[in-house]
Amino acid sequence: MIHTDNRIFARIAGTGSYLPQQILTNEDLVKRGVDTSDEWIVSRTGIRQRHIAAAGELTSDLGYQAALRALEAAGVSADEIDLIVVGTTTPDLIFPSTATIIQRKLGVAGCPAFDVNAACSGFVYALTVADKFIRSGASRTALVIGAETLTRMLDWNDRNTCVLFGDGAGAVVLKADDSTGILSTHMHADGGKKDLLWNPVGVSAGFKPDEPNAGVRVMMAGNDVFKYAVKALDAVVDEALVANGLDKTALDWLVPHQANLRIIEATAKRLDMSMERVIITVDKHGNTSSGSVPLALDEAVRSGKVQRGQLILLEAFGGGFAWGSALIRY
Image 1: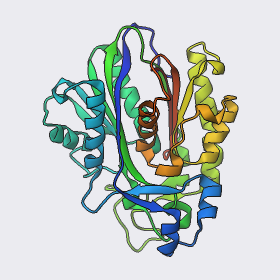
Image 2 (image 1 turned 120 degrees about the vertical axis):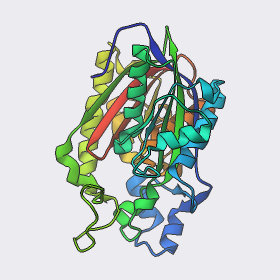
Image 3 (image 1 turned 30 degrees about the vertical axis):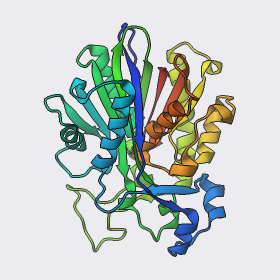
């Protein structure tokens, strides 16, 4: 558990998001020759379409655009930012970090900027890091981004994975506040489950084209991931409420990782929450990995659903396995 009782909070001052222009519908996948159907995808995942980054459009481009919108919403200039943390599993380059590339695009320098790779939980992990910086007094105004171009690592012949993912980015600006903000964050991981959701290519592991399943691709045991995710999210949701002495009826909104509608529904049922109080974007965005939670949060804020003073719970689960939650007084 990551939780402190001091009186400095990290308040979400502004949100932003960005989606690539190209939209790929379920019917488009069928036309591409993927052995699937709109009914098959919707019934199992809730996904109807996803956005695809254009040729030459990088993760840093998506993150930069989301950052600009978050800065504008917060009324903060780029040179006020004293920390940049980017959650991503699809960086532009091995190094330098995508955070430093976005920093350069923002026209600023000097403040710490680095990436966090926790797969689909990347944004929650990045948010936790920035929250700790602000609580400790090391940062006053932080930019936290979740950005992905995950479609670049898909096997378009594997209908069990290629139908799930999309590209996109979301961002928040955090400001130090003495009264309200992030109440607590909670992170967990289980490296023993690596083979249930992973990508077989890396720098140290290398690329071995003669081995089975070689290549940059998402490999997933869907049923096993589903079962583990539901249990892990149940536990981490309870953990957040218990840590703050709150009952589940206190929650105004659930902003979940947008991986699968059935997982989201299971979490809402566990909380006795009506789906009207759950932010859903998976039908339009697919699974954008670390981009999904901030994308959903930004849509909820800009639509007027999430209001200042309300209690919201963010949660995510992804490869690693890595999962986490954040309880926020918005």
